[in-house]
Image (cartoon, rainbow, N blue to C red; front, side, top):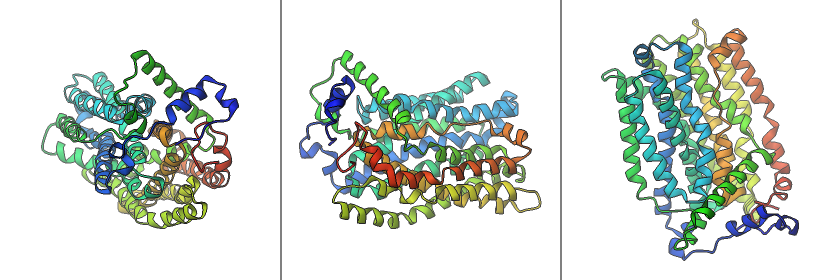
Length: 455
């Protein structure tokens, strides 16, 4: 439950609305997600984790069919990169809509609607008559798939109390990493035996299977559960949605403890390595798909270290007798150096004279960094914002803006210089988690969205 704001805050319309919406009546225990059995909560966590995996998997699966798509539509290198990154562009835009919608109408409705639209639009990709239609369909597919990136972690926040949230949040940390790691392998395997449209047909079929599975997921958002039987008039719902969008903008622009630059730099590896030096030194497309597997391995290894970070959080929790969001940030302290090390490794060892397996292993520190930053940062946002966690997490997701990295290769004189620049940007973010760890409580005390124990 959120604390009431100061009298000065109550004087504004926005603050009054926030109080009414943010302090819901507790539902009967059977309908309270935090009181459900651990087995039931873990089942739902795995289900929403699959939706995250599906969205990230679909972002790179067509890359394995890239040669066939380029040949079919007679694409230039720039056009293929544009189509490849259009999905990520949709993932950037989608949370701006899905996160506020989930805080007005609930997680269940948004998950079902977005997954169905995602499945149908993949059929459009398979039937695309020209490259323009394919681009638009991929952009829309990313938009619809992106709801999982903000809502899945928010569902975990709905289900588990802060002290029990670390282990299930590992699912939300690993799923977005494992998907892109195996996506190119899937695309290459399918197109080795079937025409390239079957990649999209199968993605659409997987979306329909998940749609059926999501029917088993009940509503988990507390305000929506408590307001059952009292549906909002359409006009009031529209105003509520606009307020949620405003809240989303405040979270993005008004919160200084943002680490979007770290996530932004990490996400460059997927786009840069697919068109950069790593791909150039690998002779066939099938091995090229394996270049992402060390990322997954690094993420899994980092996940194995999570109990150590959780032990630190539990100690702080017991000493403070309340949840301490900043204790979640322990796992982020080494993220920037790991990103920089991985980028320099990949950039300067990606040469013809060096076995490509050596370059591939640069994904180990990168994958570990991705898991560590998502685990720490998403857990921190969940503790800080609670009922607004979907908007807060979405604000982090949209920091992953795709760039035309193949053009940056040329401008900077090669992939080694590009990766050196990105490594430098990563190192610039090194102080961020330490500053937030020490000053985060002071910053949160000024927020109208603060939670108990946060000030």
